[in-house]
Amino acid sequence: MNVNEEAEQLAKQYEINLKNIKGTGKNGEITLQDVQEYIKEKYLPKVKKEVKVFGLRKIISERLSKSYREAVHVTENMEVEMDAFVKAREELSAVLKVKPSYTVLLLKCVAAALRDFAELNAAIEENKIIIYDTININIAVEIPVGLITPVIRDVDKKDIKQLMEEYQDIITRSRNNKLKEKDFMGGTFTVTNLGMYNIDSFNPIINPPQVAILGVNRIVEKPLVKDGKIEIHKVMTLSLTFDHRVIDGALAARFLNGIRGYLENPDRVLAQNTKKGE
Image (cartoon, rainbow, N blue to C red; front, top):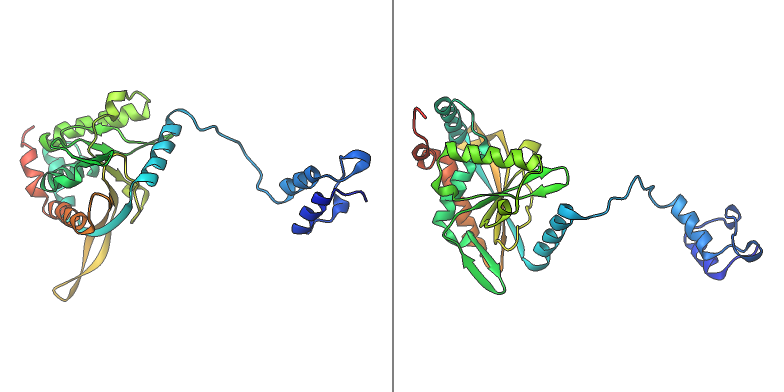
């Protein structure tokens, strides 16, 4: 049997019986390429299809890579009791004659916390930290080509009804591929909600050049100990990823506690943003 030396060495690594390979070299010599093709056929996974990364998918890939190259990602998780929040949503539904999404109501609570902790409503560019006065929140939306993050502006200044309309408009235009460049510009903080997929906790990736992103998880009923007694409560975990170059862990924890305070006492935010009879 005529076998190329490199082919023989490679075949030994895979314990290949060279009698099973037909040589394509001169005088039927088994070449290195013959062995490589045999390995490809027998040991490598079969390819169903190859999809070139381009357009929006390429932009998403590049932005995520940039985020991980440059930011120092740290994630903190915190449980929040959601009983009062769920009840407030039901009450708002009766007033507005339509049920607002959890995301819309949560945006109001996040905006209130960002007003209290402006250091999280910020970006870092070229060793310069920019703290914004305007609260424009990007929301993660899943579309066929990937995850995009259009922005809703001045979240803290708008009432629930207005936010509901803008949120629905963003979702509809995202899914119909009708967003424009302006829909992605000017965001100061990002919220990504995976609760509808039954996720309990995850590590969201910062949307550069922002310094933090909030991950929202599912609401579940679970036993909690209250004054020595076991009670069943609705609970959700918040997952905050922040850039440790800019935000310290203690500040991030205080910010999470700020959001928690608004979620567990939603009337502090939601009641003043809805007018009965509208």
